[in-house]
Length: 112
Length: 116
Image 1 (spheres, chains in turn orange, blue):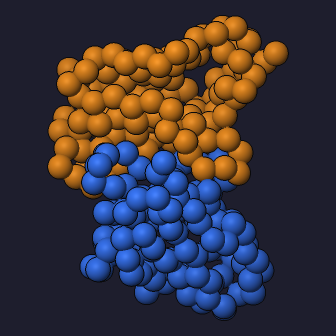
Image 2 (image 1 turned 60 degrees about the horizontal axis):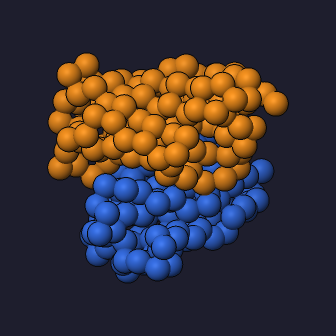
């Protein structure tokens, strides 16, 4: 089955700097890759997603890249702000399947 | 759009009692609902997948007799933790997806269960 690995587990950046979180997946049939942001005690919120027929997608300060050959995808947050501090989860959904497999999460701290 | 609610938001119960958690899709019909368990500072662990009108599919290691799932309608799924014990204390989160965006999951706010 699918396995998703996420790095780093913790990331601390200065406000205004960029943050990059990387994930790898094992199932080459996976075709949908969402990223979720979860604040303490709250629900995960979808912040951006990408499908396997696209290499890059951007939404304001957030971008995601996908390398299907290497089976890895990354989240890029530019001009980080303190409110970006949260846990970020990457995930992968195998093609034709129902389940979404989540990475272990990255705890992002943005220092003012 | 795509709002999922969960009730209760938190519950404290005595060991040996059963607890029911409801998950509702408020503005769409959910083709599939998922139940996750999340321990502090850990990832989301899928417990089971449920489709309306059929039996839930449980992940390996999840006891179906312990965690009863009922998906009575396209907008409601319930998780009952039977004979709860302190080790069942956790954050339980449901999610739902609908046919319009088949891949995307929308999460409920979660239920924090504490078993004394």
